[in-house]
Length: 104
Image (cartoon, rainbow, N blue to C red; front, side, top):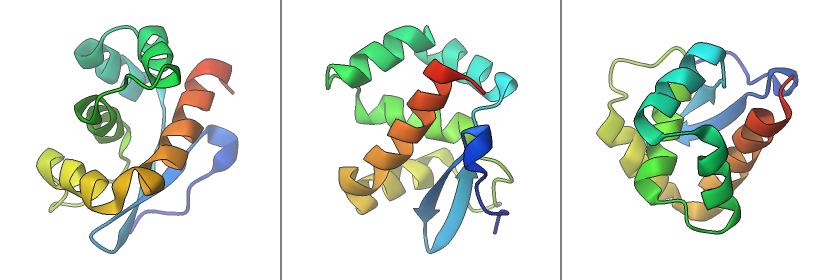
């Protein structure tokens, strides 16, 4: 299990398979996410308009996971988002998007 998320760093926690994963929007992680998903500002705009695809959310989460356990595949993370529902994933997404927009 990862150390608790540090909200000052814009980190968020996501429960997956009974384990808590810390999602950290570091520069390197955001660059990797942007390389796959396109410009982050456009991603934020799609989210604000309710047009963010489930695959995009899962991809963003995947790039931001810190101390990824061996079992945590990209597919497992996507399945966890589905299993937990949008009610669990939305606050995590909101925290991360706020960090992306506001910085530290």
